[in-house]
Length: 426
Ligand code: PSV
Ligand code: MN
Ligand code: MN
Image 1 (spheres, rainbow, N blue to C red):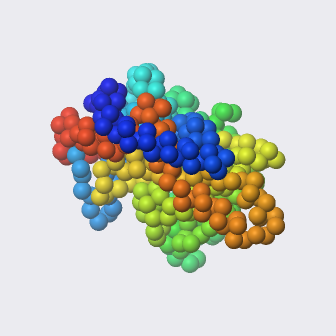
Image 2: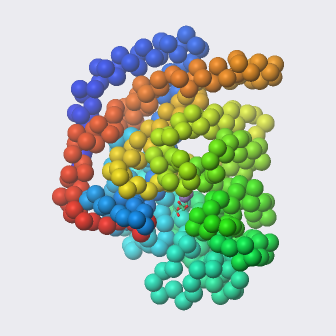
Image 3: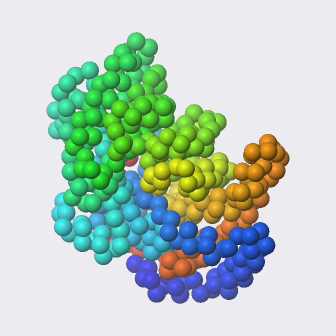
């Protein structure tokens, strides 16, 4: 399915136009003191993990419209991510969700990963659903449950994820908790937090010293009165309680409308507690739209904080894991993921164009308009030739979506896997 040679052949008709645009932009940026090849180099190095649960059509409780050709096994999910990575050279790792992705044959999986040039970036636990044959229900919470046996079951499940992570070389264990309450008075708010902190500590202790626990927050849904970990402050306080191997995960869709996410990013960077991102787009809440589809300026401002922090010598450089977290009902999920990665690379490229010295100067002298104009200069630059050049240098497609379509990938997947193939449990 779509060989490297085919990708190069499909690039041919686009090459001349690309070279013209890239050359023009290189000259334009040089006048602004920016070396385009340096930016391209940083884009080539940038990698975003693909979640196993985004590879099939997700759907909602109101309906699901399978597209066909979706992966039926972990092996097929890895095949799909390998294809994405060959198209854009920017998706060389996968996030797994247990129990949906329990590895059956670990050595075979490791070999497939090696051959595809991929790694497993993170393991994600699932205590937001009851699984078949599970002795206790999570109806009233998991790590925060009032019942010791329920908490123990949830802790055990997380420790199992850590064990799978160790076998597969994952360096991250991500915890997103659905725990919360629907009615005032239902839950003792302080005790629910205390029980969660203690449960997390038991999981934390089971992690090897080179693993990081990422603690994700979300203000509401599935619970609508209170959520045990609703905001970055709660995640941060839990990290402080646990130790250096715990970090906050920022999911872009997990904020109330109009939250200043870039400021949260700046704060967490200041504290050295920003561990990772779940990229997606959001209009209202956790709607998991394509990254950059609704608020591209905000995405740019987030990267502006990241680039600024990366260049700040006074900060200790902590690794940030970049991951997508999405689930779609209307698009071909592989096309969506290609679009998402492209938006992320574009926002990063624009942030790299910001004249940082001039911006700091404008900020220090309170020149409001100049500071804003400097950001707008970078944001309004059409950086698509830089992103395309990064794809090209990584051996990928100049236009991944166009090549995916021209190569008739979905049609081939449907032929191989069937029209009604089902995938993730989402
Ligand atoms: C539920 O809100 C959620 O979207 C969280 O963002 C998790 O990261 C994801 O599901 C996978 O469990
Ligand atoms: Mn998430
Ligand atoms: Mn979410």
